[in-house]
Image 1 (cartoon, rainbow, N blue to C red):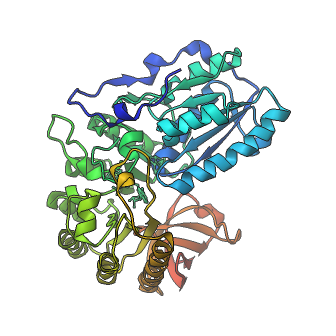
Image 2: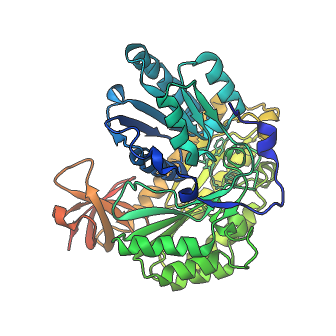
Length: 472
Ligand code: SAH
Ligand code: SF4
Ligand code: F3S
């Protein structure tokens, strides 16, 4: 049993990141050991977790498992968890009760937890103490050992707990079972070294480590050959790409080279305002297949709060960057993340955030109430703001955010936009759906044959969260 350790997770050394390949770890003899069995996986959290689940699914299918959508019938139940806020935790703990019922009826079911919550010492201790029917706990750095855990569990060995808290390495070539045939996620960097004071990610995902650009470009080339139309380059701080490597190859170089592959659409998330260079902006503006869409988390508009958050930029610096992006990248859409109710946030601090919202008129935003995460500096700060005040601020903020989302969409009315059609519309199965270059969701009157292609769509109606249109 190897449990997570918060102190270890906090450490950063200058040691070079080790790169291994999955092929060198994968024991071919385990292929098919779970033939005839089924698995159910539920994924919480960000794109990185979704992408990890694509790895996990592929590994399980190598072992012989088949995916099913009814948890009650599965032989293996896995929860790939998120630790970013308290409510993410609560959802998972709520789910554990359902798993208990299943295990009481079907003893041979294997139940496991992985992802960011598995990296948290307090969580693993609680699971081991109160949820002893969980057979498997593995961390974000241990996915490549999944075949061995399953082998051990199928041989009825005791529960498997393995969570590395070390800085993390890079495992190349883990197979993927991608959720879409048209758009794909591509990790360009793992982990985070920013240590914003409220955030758990640097502890759950390890140190910042960039993949070699050759490996990334090869992956994009292969995706393009398979017919993929869009790639999203993933990292907690994509603009810091390459800073941990010695070849002086930076995010702007990567963007330019990915653009040269000729894949039709390129996106990237998440951009920290701190590392956004003029060279990056130039490349984005120049390359037509790099989409004019930037997610640029603000977090707060108050300099005092930004400083306490450890964000390394001021309100003025954020605004300068924001306006530069708007000016240099034609038709760019910019979205953001905002936290309200950071410890001791005053009404004046909150007003500063609202001012930035009024000035930037974001295309949309994810907004959150600060949630203290065990082990982070902000969780130890004294806080005099009541939850009622925080909730009320969130409501006031959301009202403005929604207003500007609708305004941003209204500018599209009657215009023709390009949409990558991804599938049948969830709301109306006679329609198809997809996203514009600027990441607006459109439900489109068009034949199902357009799925997987980029088509011209005339926008006929706009709402707060989506638009309607028809093929032209
Ligand atoms: N790497 C990204 C953010 C990843 S987490 C960045 O730096 O922008 C996604 C969002 O969750 C953050 O932008 C932040 O707004 C929110 N978040 C993170 N920790 C939080 C916490 N403790 N409480 C509330 N929101 C939080
Ligand atoms: Fe968290 Fe900050 Fe890293 Fe983003 S940059 S993942 S908010 S520590
Ligand atoms: Fe959640 Fe981990 Fe992503 S904490 S937001 S799943 S990196």
